[in-house]
Length: 261
Image 1 (cartoon, rainbow, N blue to C red):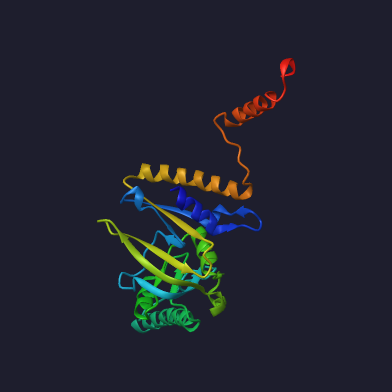
Image 2: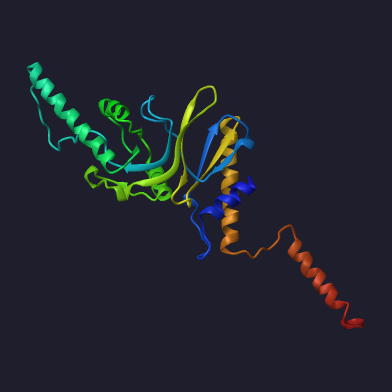
């Protein structure tokens, strides 16, 4: 644990300023396995899976579109009512909606994205279309995790779909979905990122209480390592400073004879 904490701090440390941003170190835990299985990932782990079970489980040299806008047709600001009284009108509406999804997926493909990570959900039709167009996607990713992904991959968070460009894509050497245990819980690993100054400590343990206690211990270790980078002067505890002072005074007294001693 100590070695993992030190490596994590050194990975994100700004040694010129002698400071460490602990927000760049994500501590994630999953029940199962042994405590010895705890590992340091030079990248980000997201507690999500691919939005469709038939999407690829591993993408190499991934170019990631990081979206905070919903992957669905825009909703009108005011209340509207659409009367559909014929099959033809229903087909027209459906085709218009499908064209909107087609344009969104094509926009991602045109800028070179090979993976979409979105803060919001996907419409079922959009999800099906993403799978058919061979564009893997992850949905319902939290805002904090999106920020870490953007930092790690060197990408930009895109708030509006029209603003998506190739320059705003994040880059990662490999993105993979990994299953754990008999329950087959899945998580997304984003590794070999363009900027490795965002890391994840992934804790394993036999039960939830062990995970919580280990997280607390890891946090304490990270703070100690950070404080050493800020100021590497150490005052030893356990009365050792007082004993050193006493020994020094005694050594100095031995140099003076008689009452002066």
